[in-house]
Image 1 (tube, rainbow, N blue to C red):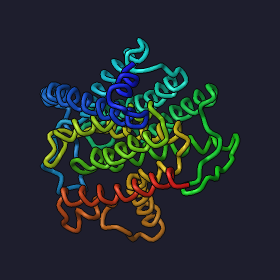
Image 2: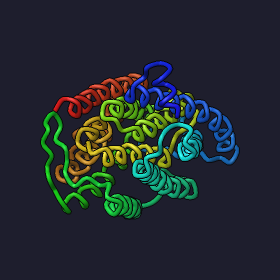
Image 3: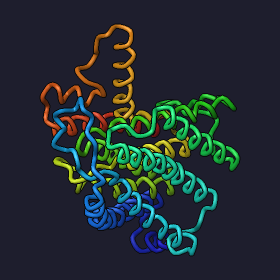
Length: 349
């Protein structure tokens, strides 16, 4: 209905309609996110839901007690707006419903929410123990594997899981058949952990997340995937709203609740769109930050020497006495470069 009105009144074609709808959703989620967080942050502060600082991060000592689990706020805002959008979609107010597209849309959201629930359990465990460690690595990994496996299963059963990987900058697709299923689980678990690890400086995960989600919105216009445009636009708005309170010096942290949700939504869009490799290139800053931590651990176990002054690598730059704002800006610039490469990998076969 709205698409038809736009086309007739302003000669707006389908890709432009996707862009406008995504931007409108982003604006609405942004406004709701700011409003919700304005209520949630005082509640977190009143209940002393404060961040515990790892003892080795002595330069972050002043941040101890800053409200955490702020991801709950922007997730609530995103879900409220998208629930309204789905109701309008089903009622035929904003366009002709695509049942299959709506199912994939729902599965992507559930992947994000499922990982966010793991984050909530982890964050609450940290608060109970009054330390920076919640669930054990094994417990968290097991739960993430369960969520990822369930997502891959329902996507496969519904016939929405590609079993071939599109190779960037080519028209070739690598056929993997059933071997794609465990590979998807591995990639999903790895990526959500990478967004989790990157959440270590004020505004870092949210800023990098905005660059990736914004590129996904642009990509959705070029490949004609309206539902991906809506969900990526919603993520842009949610993170912008959160960044109002999370920029340096942060008034709230997203916690594992928010960072795992970001990873789930982005990798869900990557899988469902059929452009997994290209979108993982867009999110390569997250991945490289996680790999720096893994390399540091493995190298130290073998040689008792460190590659970086401190891992993950964003803390290495802190040890070089870079300001947090400078590190975040650098990560965003590098992220934009990867986003451009990943974007071109899809549209220039």
